[in-house]
Length: 167
Image (cartoon, helix red, strand yellow):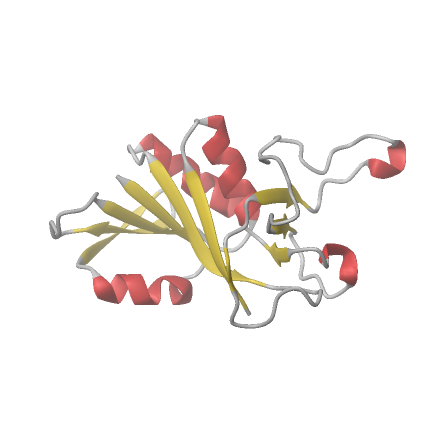
């Protein structure tokens, strides 16, 4: 079973129109369960709500009900010149932008250690709980959910992919 995590229903609109889903609520979140058998893995869509805590909870629920792969699809921002609106990116390195104790000489940018080895081609995603308009994340993209989804998937050793479009 594949679990798709979207922060907002607007981000899920295209896939919800493409397949036959039944809407249900579970633990305070909207879920869409695929009704038809189209010769592929069953798909369950969850609208997590905005923010990494909501996304992490939704990911936990998907894994608990049997999803063995997680995909996060959504929008992101970019404060640098590397990415432009409309670019499709697949980040492979994730940082919790809100958790930084570097002023105390403690490296805590990645407290859950979710990152693969970073190289020059890696797309970096910084997850913040606020909108970012300055250059602190200019090397990559910024969002509000991906780090929570990736960190929770890693806890349960569940494969995860993140696909974002720069808004």
